[in-house]
Length: 72
Image (cartoon, rainbow, N blue to C red):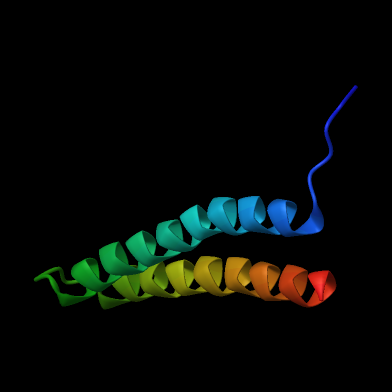
């Protein structure tokens, strides 16, 4: 017989998993900021990495908020 998790337990596990993806977005943004501020000649390379990290972070943040509203 399988044990089923409650909706609260499922939500807590989902938060733990998606939190790791938010950290990935922060790391990508940090690397983009480093490239942007370093003495490289290509400004747009660092800026594009920074924007990509922001997109990743906001995408997964949107998923967390959407699931949170679904659980209510």
